[in-house]
Length: 410
Image 1: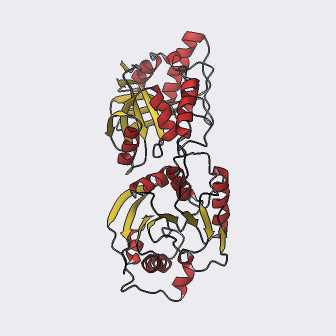
Image 2: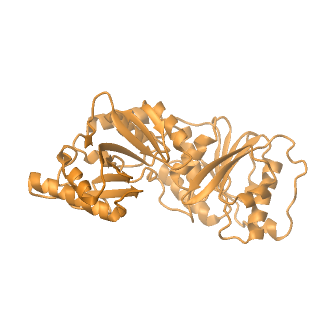
């Protein structure tokens, strides 16, 4: 059994993310000082010290979790799994009075049931503490102090401590959500993938709960990704250094700045408008993001350059003709009102996307939950109105049915 120790020259660490965002996360980690950065499938491996664990949890916009592997060993059956786990020096990492939760993933292994593997691991940890302290830690599935990650692939088992606790997409600013809100990590990743230079308008014309606009404002103003969060699992580790943590937070918070160009969020739904307004106010960004209750074609761009980034409906709740009409109308509005802009949209409906009537200059595969999507880039040059189609009848009503035109800024 190989037990991984925390040497001064670096700790082996793992950052989890969504498929398609690995390279974006790798850049973030390097900017924070990570060494030996290597990308994998939905993970980025790297090395750093304790301060980097704190920094990545607080600052990384595209990481779901930061894991610290503590032991790697071969395993062929449940008995071996128990024997290896019971030999780990658990009291080095946390005390018996801390509650625990074990998250297990099993792939291509003779141990073919993740729940049973979790039970074996729980028994081993409980027996270790009973031998050492005559007590055992409690299991807490709702709000554990310590999360242990058990990963078995074929005959290799990796045991890690989850330094994050709650997934890092749980930023803390979202108090309400419209239907199917986009994940904060995915929103932040899409913003980075656009290559936004922060020198013009940023517009989300179908903003829903406001997540994309909030993530854009936080990025532009250098507000740390976890600025609104209070707790992380590493705070319950035995080696937690509170003074170091507060120093890292203070240094990051000192970099928060103003942003001069417009960030605009709009939705034709009055319900979505209200939800986005609540989230913006909770984040303290209601004076930094212009929030509109307007349909896409009622938005008037301000500077003649910038980007649009949005997540339109994919068609689950619309008939085929309806979703085709919606996407066709999106294309008409882009061509008629947004010359000089870059437009990016994510969709899981490639057939409907063809109705936009523009050739995407870039396609990036991402996943919105279980749905395989494409992030499409459209470069809207001057004169792109040429040959545009105009919608009539019921298709137009799909986008232009908004009876509320509220505008809020500041």
